Image (cartoon, rainbow, N blue to C red; front, side, top):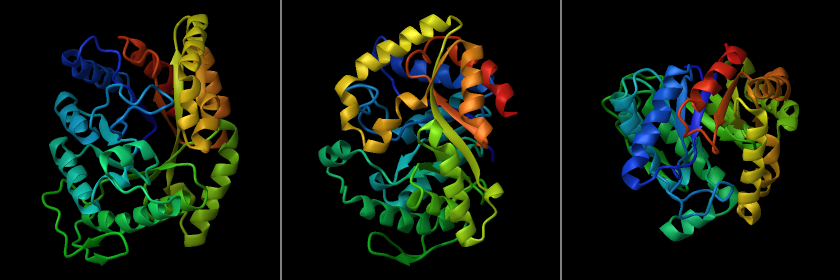
Length: 326
C-alpha cells in the first residue's frame, strides 16, 4: 500500500439537483483515477463542516458512497479521511471496511481518527465525551479492529468496547492498510506509531518539521523505524490555468467561510489559510514542493473544494502534482 497522491471530495454542493449529485461524485473519482491519483477519499461526516459550509449542505454517508464508487472505478484505492471512531462499533467498522475491500477487489484503506465534530454527536444522539475519552476509545477500538483485519478473532473487555471471539469473514487479504489522520504529537502520533501503515498529518505547513520530529520520537519510544510509517499532508488546492482566477476563488472562499471558522477546533481553525495552495500549475507545484515535500513528507492528499467538480480540474491537478511524488 502506498498513498503518494490522494484526492479527497469534501463537499457535494455543486450538483444542480440531488439526482445529479452522485454522478458528479463518480465523475470526480474516475477523473482522479485516470489522472494518476492512487487513492480517493470522502469525509466521514453526517453534516457539512463549518469551514466549508453550513451544516445542512449535502453530505453523503461515507461507506455507502465508497462502496458505490468501488463499482464505478477499477484501480484507485478507496478510503474515508477519516472515519470517526465514535460513530460506529469497532467490530462493525472492521466488518464494514473489510466488506468494502471485498467489493472493490482489494482497494480499501481504513482511515480512522478520534472524532471531533460535537454538533453531529449531539444531534444524532452519539456519545461525544472529552478529548481524553475519545482517544481512549480510539485506542481500545484499534485493539479490536486491527486483529480482525489481520484474520484473528479478538476478545477484548475494555472501558468502552467489548468483543468476544469476533470473526471477520470473508477477507481479500490480511494486510488491509490502516491510516490515522490528525496532528496531535502525543496521542495521535503514538497511536499511528503503534497501529498504522500511514499517517496523514493535519497542521500548519510551517509546523511540519516539528511534527515529523515528534513522530520520530513516538516511533523511537516503541522501537519502530519511522521509515516504515508512510506520511502525507492534507492540503486545500485552489488551482486554475489562470492564477488570478485561482486567487479570486480563494478570496471568495475566505469570505464565504466567515464566522463558520469559529466553530472549528482551535488547531483546525488556525491552520486553514496556511493549508491552502493557490495559483496556476507552476505556482501550486512550487508551493507544495517547498512548503511540504521538502520537509520530508512522502505524499500529498488534496481537496479542491472550490472547483474540483468542474470537468478537467482534477486532471489538471494530477498532471501538476504527480511528478512531485513519483
